[in-house]
Image (cartoon, rainbow, N blue to C red; front, side, top):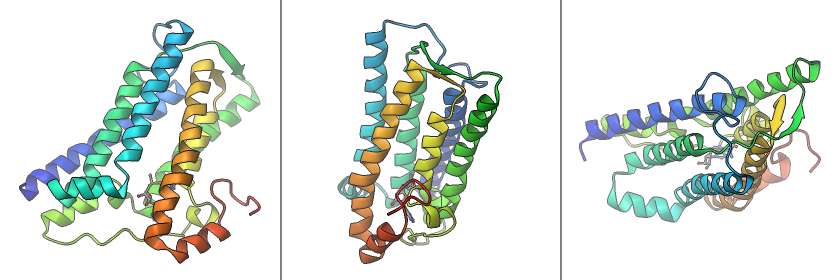
Length: 243
Ligand SMILES: C[S@@+](CC[C@H](N)C(=O)[O-])C[C@H]1O[C@@H](n2cnc3c(N)ncnc32)[C@H](O)[C@@H]1O
């Protein structure tokens, strides 16, 4: 495929990611966007729970299957290697947009701390979580993580070097700061509804399973002993946790 077309494809994928990422903040935080985790017509509890679990499973399956080395090898045997990460980013973002669009609210209150000191603390933590996510992507390599380095190097007829294993900044404190940021953002809320709680529980389970049984397994295979030492020295997700 023409390198300029791959470049435009990657830019479009990145723009859709930006929309999905920014929308996530509004969706989870019930802020500014038209459809949030607690808005819309409430169906029966059974319908809401089943629909929401299916939606999150679609995202989890897409995200996990496309991250497997075997899938990547298959993809790059058909399409340009430069498109692989952008395609992952594009389909992950579309899966997220589907979650926002079809999410069924369950508005039964689990906790409510509006207009109190805990409410301000939880709101502050919510934004801190998203900030940790964003900053951490730059600590690994934001441009490589979202496919921009690959499409740019391809356009310039340059090879993209293999991703560098990072143990800097937040990665000195925990092995998965991006996931830590998501966990904080998903759980820190002044108003927790049953629908939001379902979202937080399912995403938390997925994060732990995916990180422990998929991502870390791949990283041990690719990086080897250096990653095993890193696992021994740096906590998985809770900073300063005793090993
Ligand atoms: C969405 S990022 C999440 C990274 C990490 N789990 C976190 O929560 O910060 C997933 C990509 O980061 C890569 N990755 C994970 N840890 C890394 C590290 N310490 N240095 C460089 N890349 C890393 C993985 O190989 C994978 O391609």
